[in-house]
Amino acid sequence: RLGKRDARDGWLLDGYPRSKDQADALDDAGIRPEVFLLLEVPEEILVERVVGRRMDPDTGKIYHLKYNRPESDEVLAKLIQRSDDTEEKAVMRLETHRKNVADILDSYEDVLVRINGNQAKEIVYAEIEKALNALKR
Image (cartoon, rainbow, N blue to C red; front, side):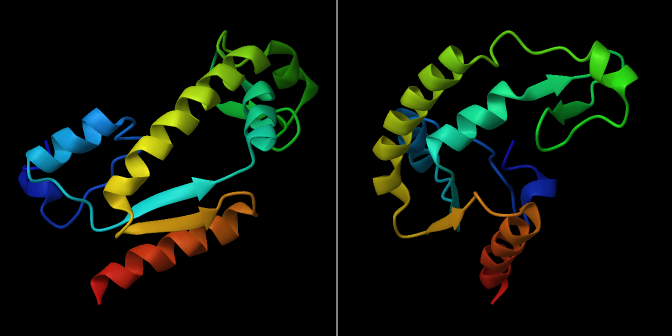
């Protein structure tokens, strides 16, 4: 896919690679990112974000019980929680993520940009934009 015309000026892989094998496969295919953005957020905050996430089954819109509450009690009453948005499953996913990230960071240390993801979304966005704009120089 990255060889297609619309990816010539740049591309973004969200959450990939997730393992050393995937990072090695990208290298073997001659695919190397210019920047590797690592959003760092304390695990207890990530668990809180996952456990509080809810979805409106009618619209598919995502809410959070603390950070992005629905606009009305009517919407709140119909929200559902995904089966994998439990604390137990979130902790298990984070354990896997922690190990995988540790395994792949060596592959990208020369292009790694660490961003504090535990800030206001506008600040996180500005830091991501700054890292991407630095590539244009």
